[in-house]
Image (cartoon, rainbow, N blue to C red; front, side, top):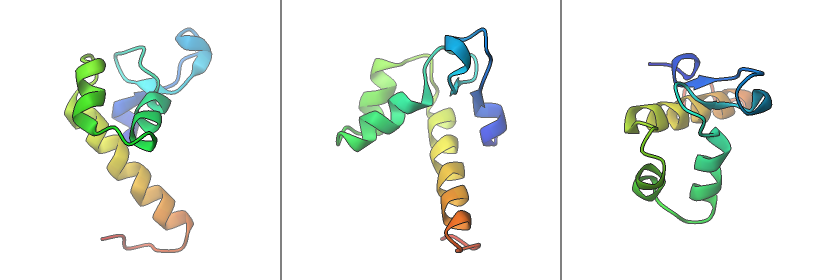
Length: 76
């Protein structure tokens, strides 16, 4: 599973906001939960239409992209 299969952007869904595929849950919600100190389980409890696999894949792929952008092509 890659970010391309776990997230979706469609102008007909929340005006093109990046959402988890098959849902209307913006990925920004996950980022906001984690930034506020909430854990992944709390996010998943509040947004049951998002699977754990989707959330974890999004986080892993985002980490890889950020590290690559910062010059670390081989993130641990």
